[in-house]
Length: 378
Image (cartoon, rainbow, N blue to C red):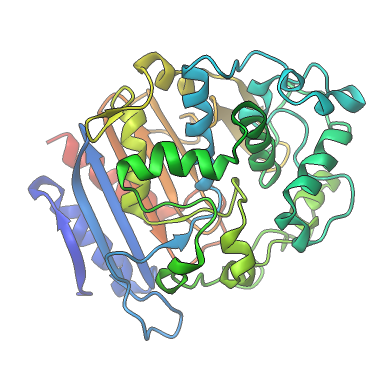
């Protein structure tokens, strides 16, 4: 079997075996997987290779771009600000960001942004991928445009725009970028290796993302609605961009985060354990549980599938069954995944470099997660 590094406590031995099988079969090239229970790390695994050529072993401190799993970190920052009373999810976005009221957006609430129902799933103006590195341009265009549909009436995945929207609200409240607030108030106090805006000094540790098979990527569908086409092609998603210093260094809070499974699981232990992690309190239990409040459900206009969104996270449904009801999650393009089970006080995280054509997790992560839940039931 493939060499797997790290550990899995006794009743989670099956998780380590499954992780090795994924590497053996070629389902994974390089990956990391981690789980915490009651704030204790009970599984911490890594293995395989950090590059497509299989010349660089995946190390204990290897990190990788996790695309939309980054959204869970931006959501955590927003939940923390709300817990302090600095942010009201029921307030109009324009309370914090007056320019946003333009073009009929004066009644869009922060909760609409948090739940992908603000009607701003993409930019109406044509933008280039280099524009993603221009924060002021991205947020000014969103502030000026009209929504694509009536806010609050349906979900429509805000694949890139959500990070700029949440991030600008955070910046207007705190005077700091969302990446800075995240680093100073969450990552550094926990000693967690996750970055929204990666310093150049850490580039040598970043694994190379291997794009999905031809035809399986975002924007590769033969037929798309205009709304989906706008999300997928304005600008298009170019996986090779994640190798650039510009992408890694930029704060793209919906897609540009860099970390590994350990950092994802150990950060989200905050939400799994009533607001505390590693002996530090970040928010109260009620503040954590706000993430469970159903904001919108229905057929998602972008993903074209049933969706249930809480405050910043996906919620369980018939399509996404989980053992415990008080569970929140989100995944990233290619397969990364973060799961927070508040009933079991557990977190589950997966980060890899071989991408599948999925934006909401695939059987590699889901199979490992099910093995964790089976271990928890013992």
